[in-house]
Image (spheres, helix red, strand yellow):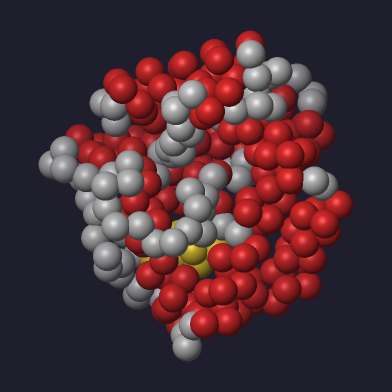
Length: 258
């Protein structure tokens, strides 16, 4: 729903104790180190909770139609494309530390170099990241998260999950979401210095930007799918595989959800 990859939404990590997050991280790293180093990609995903997932999916669709989609449409109507692109570029620039960390954990030194170059160029020349100067020079944005990192280590999806408000995911990818949110230095600084409201603004803006970018895609999928739930599940897996292999896998016709 809102996040075919909304994997990137920042959750206030005080909700989860540091002990819980650390346990997630240790478990995921242990699995990764014990697995082969070949990226774990497949067009299939286990869905043992399909009945419950479909119920949550139906709930999410109601929330989406009543709340998320109207907000995204209003944002598109009220904010000109150049301004929306500036917001998206700025949000991407803020994610530099987690992007860099995941590139390094995946052993992708070329990708890490691109992250550093993009951040340097766009911060100092692109007015703090509002303009994607690096992208115009051929250094394209590449989304990375800690859901992809264990996959590069060889860890599989685990069961497919549809979470309320968040949408399609898996045990691996939701663990990655928690780790990224907890480790994000900007989030930690904002919450530790009493600037919680700015963290919430960032989260809300990221949500609106992501949902706006999916308006046409999700509308087409919804209108042309016999079984929308099954279609989203399939597209989710294809999109994640494409992200994990840096575009080498066959991709669904979806943007890189960040």
